[in-house]
Image: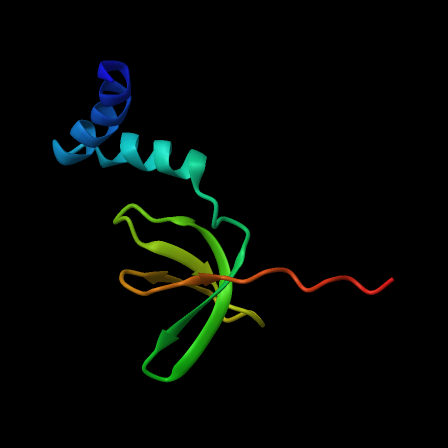
Length: 88
C-alpha cells in the first residue's frame, strides 16, 4: 500500500504545490479522450468535436468540425462517441 500511495501522491503533490506542467504531462500520457469524437451540451444545444488534449489551465481542448477551430472546455459533461462501423 505504501508504494501505491507513493505513486499517486507524487504527481498530486507536485500539482497542488504549483507544478501543474508535471501533472499535466502525466495526465496527457494517459488521456483516453485524445483523438476521440466527443459530444457535450451547451446553451445552444448538443455540440460535437474531437478531443485533442489539455491546455495549460487544465481545460479540455476540442477541435470543432468543418474548420470551426479549437475551443477549451472548462466545465462540461462529455461523452466519448463510438466510431461508426465501416461499410464492407
